[in-house]
Picture 1 (cartoon, rainbow, N blue to C red):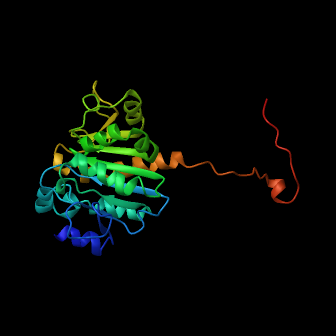
Picture 2: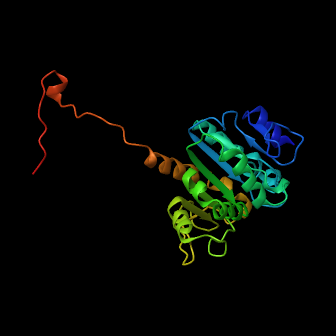
Picture 3: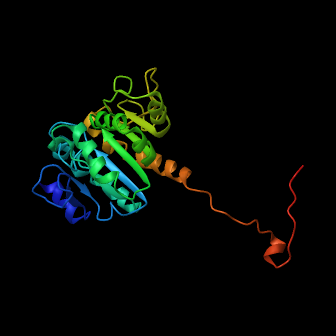
Length: 253
């Protein structure tokens, strides 16, 4: 399909079979990954689409047909991640036995074995259900690797899915949920049942939501990752010291 060719030719992603852990374009149960996704110790961006007829690299084929690739495909997310020097993994949950099983298999075969120290995840619709299911299955590994989570009009419910209190608290601190709303993009949207901070996606269309809030999501990721960076040591250099004369710096009080 056309989106696959763009991922491969323009973004230089590769298809990785999950069943044999080898590159094999003929097998259905595969993911797309950037060439150094397994070996890079930096940040890995993971994309999980809604369930249904959408395929790997798509948020919505209807949006592709009506408004173009920038609205319906995941290309804008891939390009933004690569521009940040992040690695990328695109899941393919609708070509497997179930989205939950695919996400679990991709985690076990690729992410948990990779070198990435910082994982950020974007989920649309039922993709959020599959991710929360993964969190319930492997809470310690997920919480140890994933640093930021973006739910986009997600249908997950941590109160109905089997999450312990620690995992619900972790979601509250690490995630944001962009919901359909007439409010401008990124404005708070209150809910008594919200498990994390909710923000407006800037649209009331489910299929348009990922494209509508891409900028807000990347700002959120960048802020979280920046705050996790260790502080750099520095010396206090005064004007006189910079000219060679040492000067004591006294604490106030």
